[in-house]
Image (cartoon, rainbow, N blue to C red; front, side, top):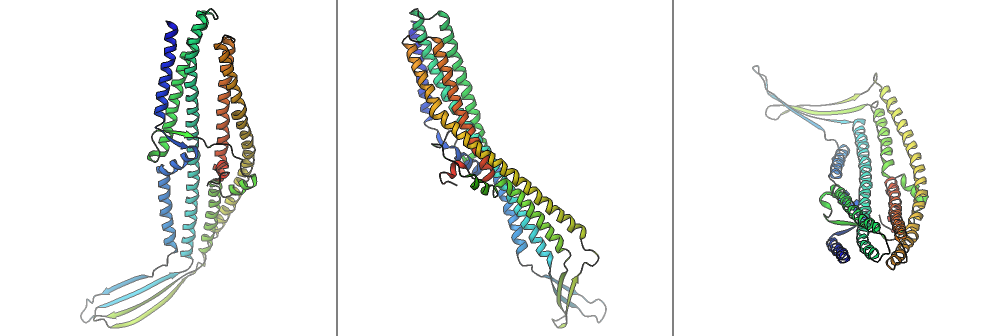
Length: 415
């Protein structure tokens, strides 16, 4: 009777698993690299940065627009007897380096904000890819936990038969029950971690992504681009772009400080008349503001030093980025080979060994120790496969963050 009860329990567990899988069929399959696109679309901070750049671009366009002349009009009312009412109209136009300095500063400010925006997008993309990878790893853990729970229930029922037949001791049945309970707890823990990982993704992409989803990895393992092509790409990457923008901003400030020593010219013209519209006179003037005593030497020297310092910092960061990229390229190749070995050799061998041992255990040709060793070997193999995939993709994400080029996507011709 107890044997029937344990077998019925295994059947019920299998039915529940079928119901769970049927519910999962309603989920939306999202590829890993699509997670980053969803996050960058739905993230509000990215939208705020875009608005900031749009505002700075408007300021830049205004600084480049023609400067309209200033118009001044006036009416003088006579107070004393015999004094006539008069009117005047004048226009003044300033030409010189002031407008150029404003345009240079606006362009530098826009370039710096754009670089900061690209860096924040790269950080957000890297964060979203890591969140998506966490979901995939949690999914794999749930799959393994479900298989282990179903397997533990079946093994418990088989152990009941072996104990009743006198092949195993009663203590092994207690161990089988403990293993089944442990597998159930592990399944609950894995499902809880998956729920948390799902929540992290939904927080990142907001309303842009689906509510119920699963992460799907791209098929196959692609070869990475050459190191030389990555080194060329890192110069235009988001991390170095901000340092380069700092150099451009310092250079622009240096130019603006030099322009302060160049005279500004103001041209003024106007007319004056009496009541009734009669023109009484026309006047014009040209004013040149020459900085004779204020040559702005301190500002020019400070701006020059700032420009040289920014250039040195950029060179140092570029050198570090190149060295980091070369190391990552070697690490990526090693991680790819480890992933290939884990997926194509270690896991298939462990699965075959476990299936053979379990069949032998059911037939009475293997004992509990053999089955336990095979189960542990399979678990370690599956965990090593997931770890190899995670390590391989994490290195890929780091390279993409440096270069804005994904080794996986570029090998497929994606952007």
